[in-house]
Length: 281
Image (cartoon, rainbow, N blue to C red; front, side, top):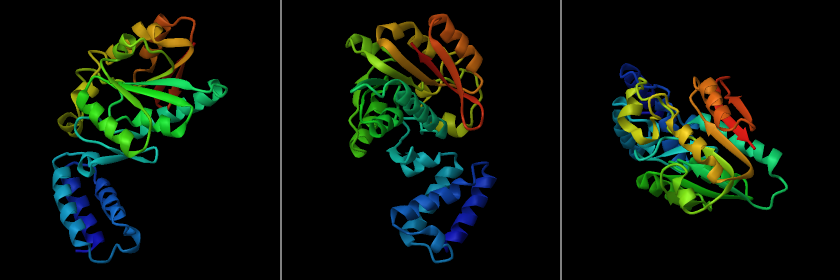
């Protein structure tokens, strides 16, 4: 079969299985890229045998709802390919916007610093902390997660991408408090989905629940951080969080309760939805 006919067939199968049909082409783009084949120059040529075999197996998995990132074993984030497996969430494009926001705030607030300590709390695959470490050499990043399995993935990504992040295991801020560590910047993309919210089965069936759900209202882990932030944050610290697009008002009110004198801002994503919250002391 040609590359084109394989993609057409896969799109049809994924559409009938109620899965994202655009993933059919994305999968082929990645498989051909790995072999230095320019897909768009050889669409009507006969497909490489190894690619065809792998592609057909992968499409079968995707028909069952397995996300593309887990099928490939990696996900692109901020131009870096991060190893992912079912012990970590697949990094989302919205989270790239959180990284961009932190880099922007860094330029506004910390340009004159020689070294800036950043905590990446609930790091998962390490996407946020590792990317920030690679993008800004002044950052000394310490990343944490409660899941040892997730930290193993993050460690492998750190090694693969030649970053210099240090990792500690524990729940939210506890491992930093236990070690008497303090930061200039705290970044956190915690589990924020309310416990009873209906999710796509591809997320529920494959992605780790410990990284998804944030208690009854989705705000449990924000409270955990807000309550203990004074124990780890330096005098003029920045805190930056990702949040669910419907949580802006509730999270702003919660932050105002804990930090009445701080500058608290809600930031919209590219879709003009409330997506990030920053707190500046």
